[in-house]
Length: 472
Image (cartoon, rainbow, N blue to C red; front, side, top):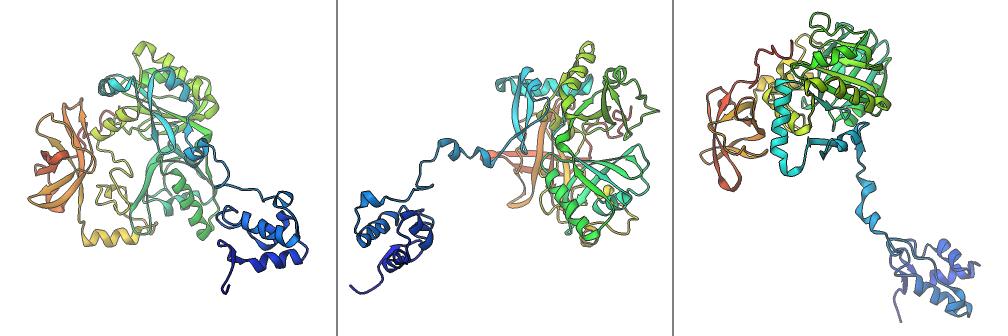
């Protein structure tokens, strides 16, 4: 018959290719396969192995049993169910205190690639657990595992200049022993990440980043310094350190007895102070910060000491009824304080002035990544504004993504919402049109199933607007 006689459709090989390979001396089926590439396409021989060896057997005058067949490989070969589950494609990470959380009965959630306590207690009692944890922090003292926060060391003679270029604030004159908020933007002026930069030496900054953003921040830093050639060493030390935040009105009372070489009084160690010291005999970096709006200290220690440090704090706080709290309570507490979560209250296009973060822009800085774009967008005016809102009653909070509407038009969307036990009402954050951002403005939110929710814009923060509690 006329036409082409294909043996392998994957590699476009014909019968003559098999005959020529045998004529060249490659009579063994494995050599035949490799020389001609029969069976080396996507089907891995499933379509072509038997026709090829049958043809070879005829040319050589041998039986099929005698000549054999090449080995089938995945996806033709057997695959275990474990491989199909894809566990290797999405690895999870555990903090040094993970087993302590399980012992306390924590319900675990996935945050980024980390397993974190959502709250301490059974799933069926979720709301009560979160309520009790938030009340403990506001009225007494709580502690949370923050080991998942990114930790990046920036060292070298050009460390301050590097920080000045990467972040929006100014860091050249930041005093040693002090922390400062950091906000990172990209070339378009969009918010990328935030955290705290603590200056431990003239040429040494310890920078924190968000749980889900640290890897991108680290790559961002490395890439830009390949362009700048500044004399700095940048190291991701996230896995090397554990982190615990102890916070609440009694945080100093619990922590002070464990710190023999650090004076934690308000005068000696004010808000945003940072130092190295010993906590319960464990070397640690002590940062006085307040993501939840209370007196708080963040302790970063070598991961090997994580469980020991956790146990020491629990023991020291036993007489004060210290209570571990999880991510869910932390999210409510930070919402009360009006603090945004990158990636939840921002998206890939959000610039600082839309999110109410204009205060984090260095007004006198010559340059930083995104500066020009931010100036242009500021001059053009914002098309949306992040605002705080409350509900008129204690009805079910709207969910993230629920729309803010005006008549038949969409004028915004909800980014965060929760019931605040400290305030006794539902509070939330939402993006709205610029003409809807003034306090007292009425908002209409369309909830699930078409439910209409009446809300009112209020000034931020919801809780302790004068910041008196975190600066005790």
